[in-house]
Image (cartoon, rainbow, N blue to C red):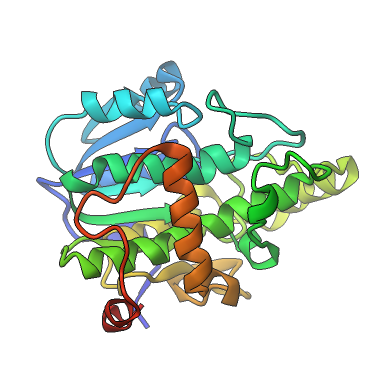
Length: 308
C-alpha cells in the first residue's frame, strides 16, 4: 500500500497551482506550506486576510492570500471571479464546529453550510478550470452520522452539535464519491479524493455541547494527538499521490488515529450511491450551482464503469 510518512516524500510541484481553503491555520496551513516548499504556487483561500498574510509570511515559495468566506455564497462567487488562471488542485480543507445552532449568511446551518455546501459551491464554480484533483477533508466523525433529509438544517430537531458536525463530514465523503462518478462519466481527467487527519492537535476546537467532554477531549489531544504537519499527510497524499479516484486517505496505524498516510475504508453510509445522488441534487438546489462538465445525472452503468 502506498503511504506518505513525510512531506519530503512529495514529488516536485513546480509550475502547479494549489488552492487550499482555511489555510491560515492547522491542517490547511501545514498543507499549504508543504506544497509551497515543493515549488507550487499556493493560494491561501481564507476568511481573515490578516491571519492569512501572517501564515504566508512563514512559508517558503510562491504564496498568495485571497479572501474566501465559505459561509457566504456571494463571497464564494467573488473568489472564483477574482482567481485567474487554471488550478491544478483544489483542497477543500476549511471547516468549523460550533456548540450551538448558528446559520450562514444564506440561512444554512453553519456546520453543513461551511463544511459541505460552501465547498460544494466552490468546487462546481471552479471545476471547469481544475486540471488534476479535488481533495475534500472529512473526519472519522462521519462513521456515526447520517444524512437527515427531512431536517437537514436542524430546524425541527433539538440541535446536537456533534451530530451536525458528523452529518457535514459524511456529506463531504458522499460529495467526493458522487463527484468522482460524474467526472468519470464526463470523460474528465480530474479525480476527486478525500482525506481525514486522524487525531490531530491543530487548534480546532471540539464543541460537542458537553463542557466536560470537550475539556477531556482537549486535554487528551494535547497528550496523544499528532501535530498539524503529521495531520496534513493524508491531505497531501490525496492531492498528489498515486491513489485511485474516489479514495479516502487517512493515518494507517492505531485504528486510523496516527501514522503514515494511506488509503483507508470509509463507512458503509459514505458509499451509498442513492444517498450521494440525492444529497447532490439537494445541494444544487440550495447553492444554485451545478456540475459544469456534462450530464447532470449518470447512469448506473457509467458509475459501474468508473469503478467507484
